[in-house]
Structure formats: structure tokens, C-alpha cells
Length: 393
Ligand SMILES: Cc1ncc(COP(=O)(O)O)c(C=O)c1O
Image 1 (tube, rainbow, N blue to C red):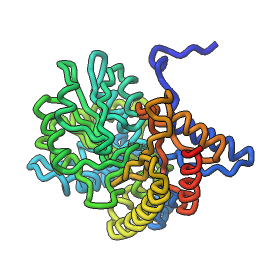
Image 2 (cartoon, helix red, strand yellow; image 1 turned 90 degrees about the vertical axis):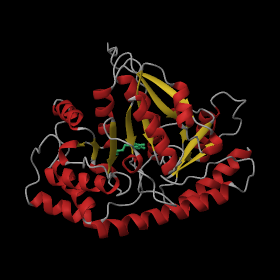
Image 3 (cartoon, protein in one colour; image 1 turned 45 degrees about the horizontal axis):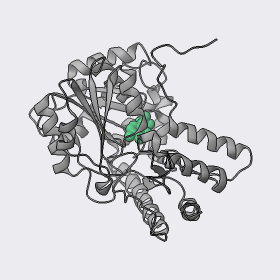
Image 4 (cartoon, rainbow, N blue to C red; image 1 turned 180 degrees about the vertical axis):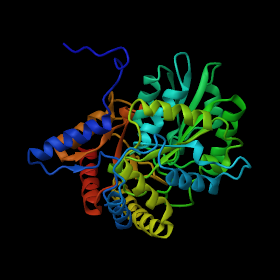
């Protein structure tokens, strides 16, 4: 009889993946589910990247690589970081660790930095896995609830109010999953300046940075006074429509990079060789990449606007207007009176309206649901009409 070890006794299944699985099961049973649960672009990986990968396979990219990733990719990542970081301590390839998706990069970072007795500040709502990764590292999650009036963003003062002598780190994510909120350069600078003053480690997850609908989103490297205690995490999954290739990375001080390389040398080894070459093409074939990203972002923007216009047909529906990423955060009907209103609404939408969304409890905000608009426009629009109908039901 299996009983979980103490390591995973508290682990919760990823709610976002659970929704996708349930949606898939209903589809297999013949239902026409519109799946707006997954955080995955519906586009194919751009052709220039696929071609580069095919060439790389033929050229022999089929073997183990250096545990921390191939040098040209790490150099390309460092070069990109140096477009934001202007300090004299230029970012070097030795500070980059390539992993099997930014999810692994985030886990490596938490596991290498945090431990028993440490507290980690997590602006809330945040992506579901941050809470689990911090807990798996034996550290204590300190959720800092944002204000929905400003897209749930937190301020330096709010973080300071939750800090104790045990505070060891802070998770940041701009643009944010699940809210789509984007911190301005000044907002981000204030938070990073506080973190630097207090000596907190900052893990800045910038996976959605290139998916923005207005001004470019600031990187922590654009505004941080130092990068002594800074880990910037990024990857190719979202902006380049490369979720299945599984490539992410950290940029951190070299001793931490070395520790994370050792950690993954005992767990996953290197990220897939061919995927690293695909990511290299994505990062270095700039003109092609810019065109591809601009086209995808333009389509996300159209869907966002169409979706919000439909939702606004019912003035009772409260929805955050996202400036980045590809999620709508919607306050569920009955919020404030019904317990876990988001789960009730998500269940109703899936079982009765054939629309899959993620309950906000996955992001520690049970009154809300997250709706991805990374799906074909007509599907997004149809789903929004069903949401409006279900909202009034
Ligand atoms: C905020 C955030 N960070 C990281 C990831 C993981 O991305 P990857 O596919 O690079 O592991 C996701 C995926 O949903 C995400 O939403």
C-alpha cells in the first residue's frame, strides 16, 4: 500500500493540469469542450525554429550536453539579459543554467535557496506551482494578498508589512499568471530596491514578458539596483509557442548557478539537446522571432478585446483587463457569499456549459476563475457567451 513520504505529503495536484485532464476526458466521451484551462499558446512553433531543430538533429544534436546547457545558447541568453542589465558586472554564460522548462528552473531556484525556517513572500494570486515549490523546499509560504482594484499587484509597503526576520525570498511574476497584470518599471524598482535593502532573494519569473499589449514589460534587470540576490527566470514556452520543447533557464550569481547545475545533474541532467538548439534559433534569429511574436501577440490582443467586450454585456461581471500574458481573471458569481465560488462556477461551466476554466482557489483566491484566451478566436468568443449565460443562471 502506497503512503506518500513526508516530502510530498502536503503536495496538491496542479489544478490547472487537473482541469485539462477532466476536459480531455469529457472530450474523449464525445463532448465538445472549449478548453480555456491550459496556459498554452494554441499556435504552432514558428517554422524557422522547427527547421533549425530538424537541422540540429541531422547534425548530431542527439546526445547529452553540458549539464548547464550548450554554450551558444547560454551566451545568447546572457546577451539578451545584457540588453536590460547595464551594470559593469555584465551577465556571462557562466551565470546561466538551461533547464527542462522554466518550471524546472523555478524549482531549482527554490530548492537551492530556501529551506526549513525560511519564509518566502508570494504576491497573491500567483501561479499555483510557486506555492508548491516553496513548500517542497520546506520553507513557509507567506501569501501577500494583492488589491483587485489594481489588478492584484502588491507594493513594496505591502511586502514590508509581511516581512519578518525569517524572510528569505520573494517570488515575482510580471506579466502575471493568473491576472495578466504588468508591474510598471517604477513599481518593480520599488519592490526590488526593498528586497536589495533587506537582502532577500528575488526570483523574477519573466516567462510572459514578451506577451504584452501596451508598453514593453520591464525586466528585473532593467530596474534592480543589484543582481547579487537576483534570479531571473525565463524560457521559450509562451512567447515562442514552444511549450512542448521544454526549455527554460535561470540567470543568477555564478555560485548559485553552479549549485543548481549540480542539483539538476542528479535529477534531470541536461535539457533535451535538440530543444536547446531550437531555443538557440528562437533567441538568435531575431528578425524572424520578432515577426512571429508580434503576430501572435496581435492575435492574443484581438481575442482579449473581443472577450472583454462580450463579458461587459453583463455589467455585473467583474473582469480584470490584462496588460500581458493571455488570461482573464473573472470574479465568480456569488463571490463573497458562496464558499469557494470560483470552484462552484468552474464546475458549472465545465459540466453544464462545456467550457473548461481554472478555479481561483488554485491561486489562493477562491472567489475568482482564470480563463485562458490562448485558443482560436471563435472558440474564445463562444466560450465568453456561455460564461455570460452561466453567470446569469
Ligand atoms: C508563471 C509561469 N511560470 C512558469 C511556467 C512554466 O513554463 P515552462 O513551460 O517554461 O515550464 C508557467 C506555465 O504555465 C507559468 O504560467
